[in-house]
Image (cartoon, rainbow, N blue to C red; front, side, top):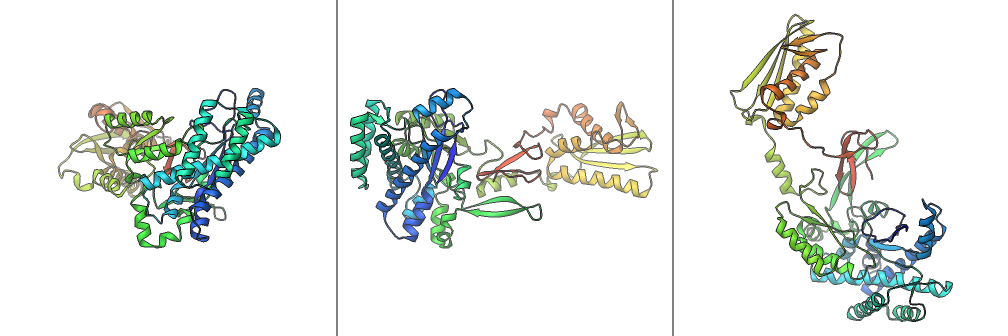
Length: 491
């Protein structure tokens, strides 16, 4: 079980001046213990989910009363009056795989029923504990009578339909409701964002109620003894033993996130939302080719089943996508320009540079008006120095042959280097050979080939701000973000 306190979250529909108190029950661990270690059945699983949900509700209620971290007195007063607690779950997909040995596919009828039963168990556990606190402390927040009647009747119906072991608990809950017209807490369940929670809960690639993104995720961690970064493979903790079975692994791979249709994902959200008091934090993954009309139908469906909301993630809408399929990797590889793409006959611009030493700088252009090579020849500078500048030109050329968009980074890297010298060519001035090379490249793009937008556009920002090195190079890798510049990771 994981505890989070007072964090901003979109799925928690809180009134003004209240804190968001979220707690998470690790149903993957419960399923691993119940189905794999103890070899027990569904009744025991649902009972444990309810027990730990009640424990989470108790801890959340204590947190509300004892926490001194409220930023404003108004927030403290309102929160301690309403006592809102949002208990959710993490590791649902792993629990589903263990419960049915991989034969129930995320999004199918069996998975929907299991989702409803698991969420109902969690909700009953929280309400049972809140009712107990109500009787002990003679305090209750008055719930909306119409919602309360509908909510409890649906829980009773679900209990009967799926033979859940909660007749006693529901009877006690109803007795408290008749007397107090509510519960100790104004809210008891929510489904919090679990990207980070899954790390605390050691769930690996399985987060919240989401389908798994991959069987294995690659992460970088710092070795504190050597201060170096090491790359490791991470898999869902509670499936390690089962994944040794090839057939089971194939079942898992067949139901990864990008194999689950958008409507199946929405049906799962609907299953959980039915028994959640606030909202569900769930992203619907859709293919890149998804049309506006198709998204409209998803929105209309969610409205018809009265979902509180959902987020859509269209594949490749961001360059740091959460998961990468083999097909996508192949497509990206095919799109990369190759050395062989260059025509054997290319046009070029030659610049005669005057300065401390004279030099010739040549920019070679491909058929799309992109600079793909830069050659540097320095006269009367000595064999060693001339060789170094020729090497610089070759390094630039190799980079641009493979990735033409790197030209902007090359220019920014070389520009501004000073050696106390002065170079010029046709109104272009530089303070060193590297500096004049950068200025000539920029001049060629902006004046000889048209605007930068028409030739080699600078790539858009591909990452978030890294708190370690300050560069915009934080990319998502599974549930973590890793800096491609310095190696910093959020895991």
